[in-house]
Amino acid sequence: MAGELKITLVKSTIGALPKHKKTVQALGLKKLHSSVIRQNNAATLGMVNQVKHLVKVEEI
Image (tube, rainbow, N blue to C red; front, top):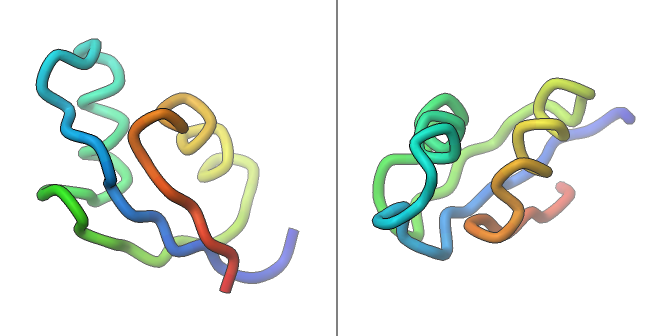
């Protein structure tokens, strides 16, 4: 699980569950189409899996 992930918010959090909104915020995503680079580890993968319908993930 080495490397990094580029996570991009591709769907709005309006109407999403409050838990999912907080997860997106904890990932560091603020606006639509904003991207962050995070380490590829179990914690990040768990957060991404929870909001997989809202984000796009690329391995870099």
